[in-house]
Image (cartoon, rainbow, N blue to C red):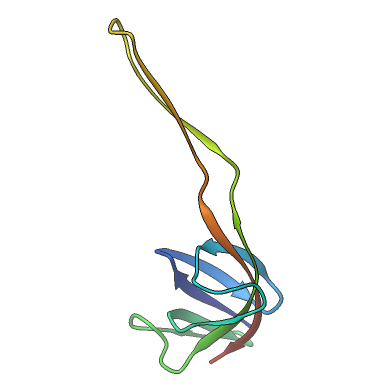
Length: 103
């Protein structure tokens, strides 16, 4: 059984036991979160697609940790003017483990 959920403007295909990194959620490590924006559910080969969401379907997950991703470098450069800028950015994310998919 798997589901397609939407969180943080992105879509993820999840099933029980999956560990994934999503955009930062307001929850502490060890908390339980519920994703109610379930777009599709597949159960034993039968697929239920929502319009836009499947009514009554939820995905429950446990927050494992709050962390920051690796640093990326952002650079700007304009030739012949001596203009150079370099910035770094580390995105916050939440690591969750999917515990239950209900349809």
